[in-house]
Length: 365
Image (cartoon, rainbow, N blue to C red; front, side, top):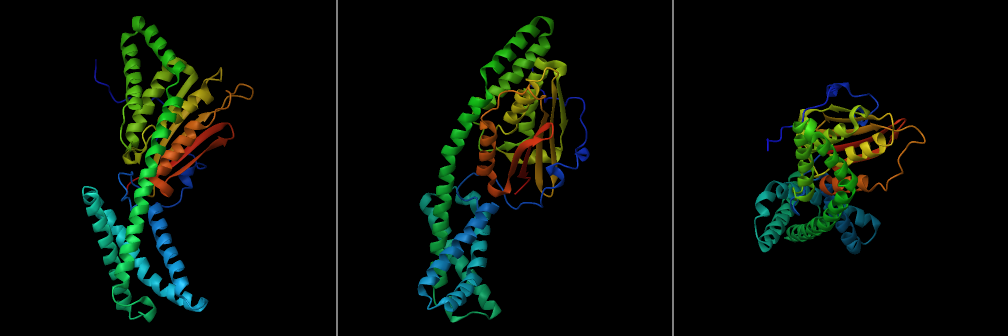
């Protein structure tokens, strides 16, 4: 068996700078902070986790101080004073836990609880110390060890919530993976590919071997757990293998264009992100059209984000394939949300005579 070479790009490749002016590549917002692959409950670097943590801490303070306040004005003064301590303390705790997470995850459960609550107490003291430096401390901010106790309690609550969030991802990822397998490895694709290889065995053995190797790689990725994330470059290679098989089946009916930015290949994405998208493009855009059509895959980097676009031509009216259930698109969107939270963007829909899928993920955390 010859080693599997990296698939070459089909002809028609253009540079990423030639993207059209009406795509999301030209209208995406600035860089999104955070966004890492979920490796543990301590993913406090994600922007979504940061926002929820800050809102949670301030929500608890608002309710707790409301019970102790005499009237609305007293509550507002107490809340403003507590916020001056809580905000820097919360952000400090999130940053420190994010920086130490690789070491914390190696500790026992008891050690993790002790460390994160201890860091919470220190974060409360830090917030109080910062306010003290400004000379704006008021009697409403509490005395003695109140900031330490509050910091430890809120840190414990946040850690518990993060653990629940991490556990809740496991069944969702598993269900999405199983559904993805069902939608992606369609029996007629397997049979068509095998028939193609059989037809090539006598007339072009080398191409038959390449088809079987591409098919083997597709099934290897599908049936073997590949981890919580892969690089975008790996996903592009898998999609190239799939489209190489389809290119042999459809011949001149299928025109494929790759516009790839090598820098975007470093982004981490969920496994099996691109393959179901290009399969949808072939199934709904090329297969029903007697004259065939085109598929275009583009990647680029803008403002610290990796931008991915998969587009395809649509068949003429009356030749369209029966509408699907949207399962593949929903699975891709859900797995992006689980991995990158609010730092990822996903959209799909028709644009005149084209179907386009846009994906935006953080390039690096």
